[in-house]
Image (cartoon, rainbow over all chains, first blue to last red; front, side, top):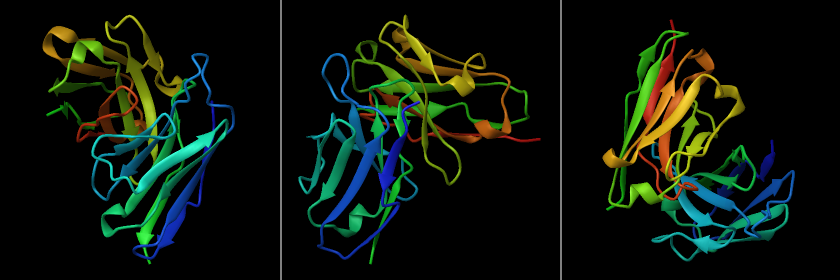
Length: 112
Length: 114
């Protein structure tokens, strides 16, 4: 199975400051159709996960533009330009290129 | 509005069975890959199974192969997960999701315990 490793696992951030989460995979996530199936999810406390970013850098509908995704190959990053109180929760990256689809361990973002 | 509503969870003894359902609305169900993803209490996310649009292609996590089976009924806009030979480690909230997780339901809790 493809192992997906996130860092940091805990991310205390001051309101209004930027935040960054790294995601590394044990294999390239570029598929045979040349797509890269790397997604980012947010899970607020007590809620279902919500997808923020699909295929590395595409924001889902309704996702604020302070969220951005980038990366290639085996290294990917989620950035929040200015953290707001509603951003508190756990963030997961997920690779969908190889079966089984696998998630990172999650990064818990809290307000410092 | 796109909606997914899971049902069928509950408390079951080890070795027992449950059938989860997911009622879909607000999108063209028959044109969408569908998935089941689970989350053990206090833990991360685990992709359990997915199925293509007409049900001809299915993938299951190795740890559930031979015990769980994903299926769908496009006429009823419904997704299913038949779970047999349940184990304590299957205890989790089970979510249905569209495709690569574009939309998720609220989840249904499965507890396997004697």
